[in-house]
Length: 186
Image 1 (cartoon, rainbow, N blue to C red):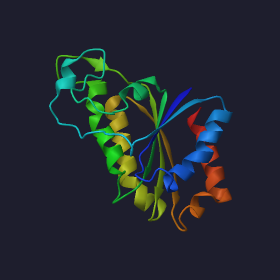
Image 2: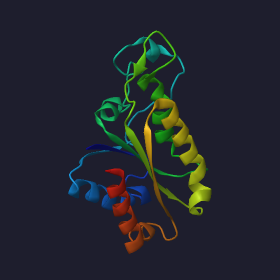
Image 3: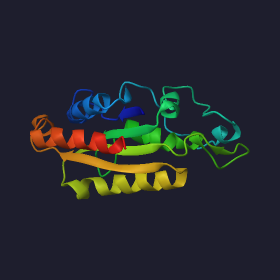
Image 4: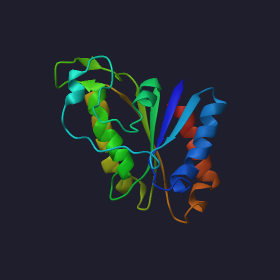
């Protein structure tokens, strides 16, 4: 299985990156091909709402020429949204990627079809508040995106930040990330 991890934290070596380590390790140990794309060091512009992508058949078709990881998304069988939860939603760079989903769904112009229907989507999240209170709004948004785009939502694993990086290095956090990796590969 081809797994794309979109790492959305602005801190490339922070909590979310730390939680990704055992998750990625387990994916690879179970035969997955993994691409790890950090969004913070990319120039990914917000969606302009221009619908130009809706007139381009058979390809992503966005008129903005930036670092949007469209080719990586198309390559993947499973897209993992790894993000800290800020104000009940993902980090800004991740939000820009999510808002640019229109190019994968040809529902609003002369082009037709979907470039990514059937792909799996999972969430790997870090947060300050208690689990569901912190992650429910983001998870609901992703579930709705998946339904709208005919993607398969396969779940969320999250860990609360109680002691900075140490929170994500506990036996429980590491074991949970590994179990979640095996779950999303099924």
